[in-house]
Image (cartoon, rainbow, N blue to C red; front, top):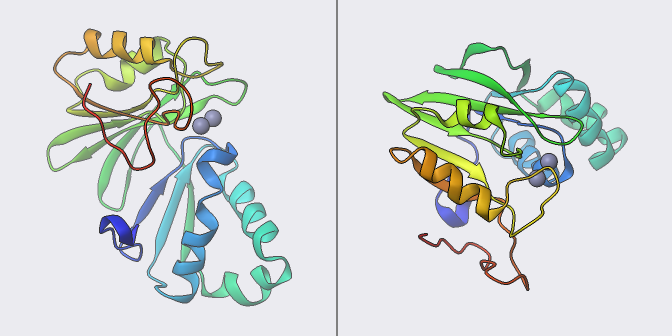
Length: 191
Ligand SMILES: [Zn+2]
Ligand SMILES: [Zn+2]
């Protein structure tokens, strides 16, 4: 975060779309920072079971020291996402997306008069169109070419963008490495 100029201590709320490892296992180092370096209050908002799932992850990460030393210093609140709610002063709306067995929460967040839509992982089904409808900016996953089980393919992403021409799309969760057309780490490309 500091590499891209984000103050990790200033984050007031974290929206979780679902609990898959590629969306949660980056959190322990961030929590470590919020426990020992910058203990400002923080809210984690996400699907049903968020408190149990995240507390279990912190426990696996640090063993008995989590409960004994770290948990008392951690200024945290857990909130199950409501259909419509407010967190850290921002209004949000939750849209249930299709993603494998667990599903995923997409969020529409109102920021300074604009609508930001965030998908997390999703299949290219009707709820995704509802999520991005009328959004100013949509951050949507676009995993790879062809058949990408329970995710968006690059072809699906292109079709989505065509259906919502007024929305500015930023696609993430993109393959990198050796796949044809993959991007490099931290690389931003215009398509
Ligand atoms: Zn996932
Ligand atoms: Zn994922």
